[in-house]
Length: 145
Image 1 (spheres, rainbow, N blue to C red):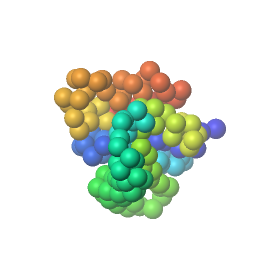
Image 2 (image 1 turned 90 degrees about the vertical axis):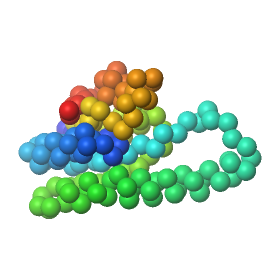
Image 3 (image 1 turned 60 degrees about the vertical axis):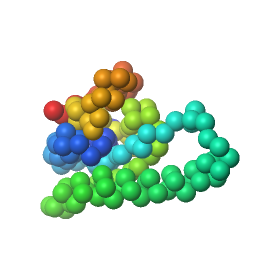
């Protein structure tokens, strides 16, 4: 039996609405909520030796910044009431692939994301995270407008 709902956040209003919708569902179904922010990162980027040395420090800073800027505000909004188990996760990688991995890792009933993210231009060029999730996810995907 599934034990959580994974929510992909990106700082957009749509992703915040997705978090609130998922929180309501988690309360109704007795599930944990896993708020996730994915820092875009590709192992195929080419770096100099100096950049490779700094990369682990940069990654730690990116995680701390994402936690503070994107996850903590939503955690604060959802923490009122106390009847909801919420955790937050920051990972590096491809957004859809990472959310799918988190869904497997946290035995998710489904993944919830906002329909429109931060960068509409990027979406036009590379496709959207919700579209990719629908193709990749082994669990249902709830897309919140």
